[in-house]
Structures are given as C-alpha cells and as structure tokens.
Length: 222
Image 1: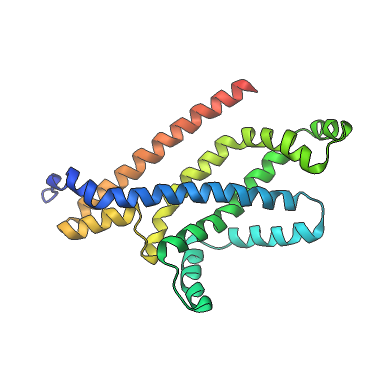
Image 2: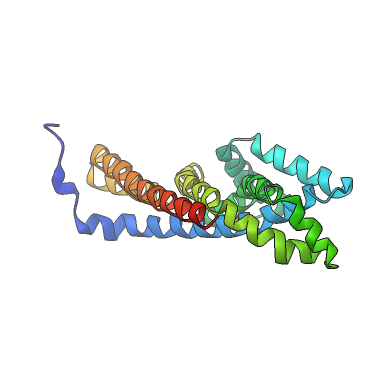
C-alpha cells in the first residue's frame, strides 16, 4: 500500500472518464431489461402455447442462447454482422442488440415459471366467463405473474448490470472502460480497478437490499 495514491480519487476523474461509462451501462441495462422482458414474455407464451410450431423454435432459441457464454455472443455478433451486411454498426449498438437478444432467453424462463405458478383455477374461471386466450393472459395471468416474479426480474437486472462490463471485449465505453481509461491516463491502474470494484459493489449491494425489501412486501401482500 506504500505506492497507493489516494490523490487519484478526485471529482475530475469521475466527470472526465467515469460518468460517460456509467451512463452507457445504465442505458444498456435499462434497454436490455425492457427488451428482454418484452421478447422473453413472447417466447414464454410461445413455449406455453401447446403448439409445436411455436414451442419448438422458442425452445431452440432459449436453450441455444442459454448454452453460449455472453461474451461469445457479443463477439460473434460484433464480428459477423459487419461481414454479412458489409458495414459496421458500432460497438454500442452491437452491445444493445446483443444484450436484448441474450437476456430475452433468461427473462423467458423467469416469465414461464411465473405464468405456471398461477393456480389453474384462475385460468378455468377466466375460461368460464368466456375470455379468449389473449384476454386471459392480458387481464388475469400476466399481471399476477409479473407481481410474483418481480423480485426475480429485478435480481436478473442486477446481474445484467454486472454483465455490462463484458462489452469491453468489443471496445464499447461502459463503466468499467471508464475506470480503465482513467487508470491508463493517470498511470494508476491499481487505484482505478480498486475504485471500480467498490463502485460495482456499492451499486449492486444497494440494489440487492432494495429487492430483498420488495420481496418481503410482496410476501405480506400475498
């Protein structure tokens, strides 16, 4: 610790290097969560439809995505798309598209479990009053499933935020890249990575504590 320079930790470092990366990490997390839940819910409904022509493609997509490391999906998309379309779409857009596509597979399984957790009696009651399949899902099943799965969805979002650091592989400027750039510019990589670890820990630990409190409140409502 003799060579550890605490003077590295200044507001100038934060504003010049870290805020830009933090902004992209938050945007990537928000877009990937929203897109992942939307597409994941669609995939879950396809798998629960009972129709093989819907269930099979959704199952192949979900199981395929869940079997490949995220960093390989990021690299594969970033390197293959320019080769296929003849031009680069940029690291940031590649990251956004890749994360939505990848997270949809995980959110799909969460939503499928949430839908299946709803008692069958509710489905039968909806059918008894003449609701169509779409009305059952929209008005009865999905609202309850979202409430039941909310803590799990938020936990997956926290994991997603941690995974945004993987976009370093394609050069996107995320939170970790901001710390790395600051460390290189000031010649203080150790101090930079230590600060990065502390920031990630504080953010994720705080969010986890909020999710835990929310889970208790939902349990009381039930």
